[in-house]
Length: 491
Image (cartoon, rainbow, N blue to C red):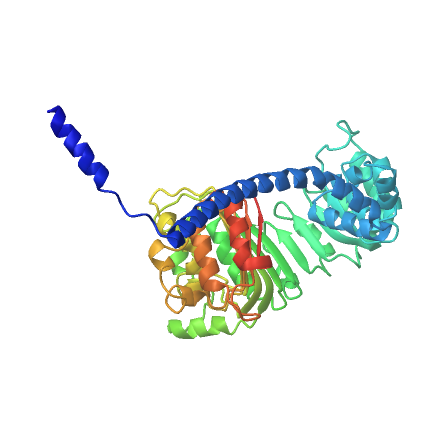
């Protein structure tokens, strides 16, 4: 047995493979070295990326501080005004004036920061605001809620009205967070020559009509009287009942100068009469003529905003979608929040009669949040493609903010740019996706491959990604190598 093993060993030893050629050995050695270098470079790249992010985080406060020190006072004042315009009350003005000596000096010299006057604050504060506002038009808010300080005397509102009365010729916006008494309103001058905006948190009484002679902007929970509708340029209304919607549709036909419309449906439940609603009560039974008459409502809007929330029923919204046909809109937005998630929940985006996206515009924003998806409707609803496919107008800019929104199917990613659904994207130039947790990296790669074109001014010009959970910064860094400055993100 031992002899047999020795024989096998000698036979194996005699069978020697020929040596590799010099060229092959050289190439294999070079390939091995290249792979080793690649691994090292990838490790260096990841380390540098982490180092860059750390340095950027540490530099940010220093850059901001240095930038603020270099800003001229005039530019800083403009920044303050922008922050003030983004807020609703006077808190920003008070806060920014207490940051440092320079901020306070600039803030006190900026009259627009001190134009929001309230009847429920301490009278000395009202006097201080009026003094700082100079001769600029002011916004006056009637409110009986205690805000500053915590305990106010019963006659605080009347004292503030006495202080405000001499400024009545500069009242530009009038807000009612609570209704003043008739005697309080009658103590004011009837001729408020600069008054243009009226905001009311509840149905306003008739005795306020005397102040609405020059009103152009209404933000109310009620329909303005017929005598005021023709001159209205901006209308912001909130509905709580289905019948209110029908009344508003009729009123909108009289607002011939309307340019900005904002509608909110808040817990509007169907009363069963929506399907029978027709805005034009003529004697004709020809429905086509009625639709044509509605198209003759020749109006173009600068902005159109629709908010549907708190389990509002789709038929209620349909009364507005199907009966108000606007010729053109520059910017539109649709917000769906806290809806029941039934099988027809997608219908909140469509005008059923025209089978088009409701109030489509060249610039369109869609926000979908906190909506139940009991029937998994949104899981199979490609929101972006549908917006582009069913637009009446060519959409060039779309913003989507939704953790529920889904995008293209895997099969579509493998299609050419000349096939559907990519042909629907031909007009799209700017796309922003925010809080889109269902967005995948391969979908973003498909957008870059199909939509970014080498020709100047053609194809997708900007893609902005904001806090989308499925997208990593490493992927975005790689994608930017092909998209360049057209890709921006905030994670």
